Length: 304
Image (cartoon, rainbow, N blue to C red; front, side):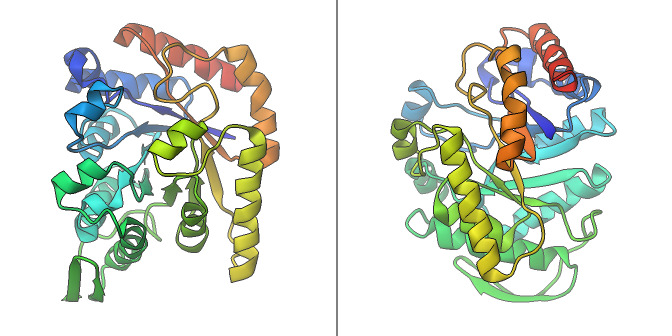
């Protein structure tokens, strides 16, 4: 089992305490020192104010934020959790990702999703109705761009006719792509086009709002992994699929940290179900408290 912790780049209202340059560097170094395998950041470039007021969040640009984390660390991997693919031209995503991969020495994991927040799609001129098809095409386009060879490819909103992009990513096949979402369409996308699946806990009410499938228990998770394995067998996929779960109790909206003892007891259950990574959010009222809790959580992962 490997472990990621989310940097609080959504805490923009608190300014330099959590999202200043010194803060990002200190938080990333604390996660690395605690033994975490990756740090992650979220993505919301232009959310509706009403959604934010109801409990949503702003966030730093994920590629820029992770570049600060990369510059302050040497080992920890850098995870976008997640880039909403239909918001951006796929070749611009490919360029940002390859640049970050090169500058970090090959540490990027590109977490992606189709998205769900319709007013944000509208504000960005993105195609909400066809977002799943757009996401599929975007992954194909990103991989083509990463080869460094001329690309001839057309999709919804783009057409490349012999265009090429350098530098290639440092990782030989490009950064691993992990697909976020709980739906069967998201799972198929992960199996057919990516290296990982990134589900998240979603009670039925939240799942309806986020336009995904509910994920309320280990049984729900096991069912999703079973479907992924079934689809892999159907298409002849033999490569293992990483499964990165936000464990129950560690969601972004959590107001208090989950009990470490309970978490320690669950890790083996998650592993037995087929989870290979756990990605956690750590609530805190200050930067110092966040670092202390991350250190304690890192110790809990080592002594489980």
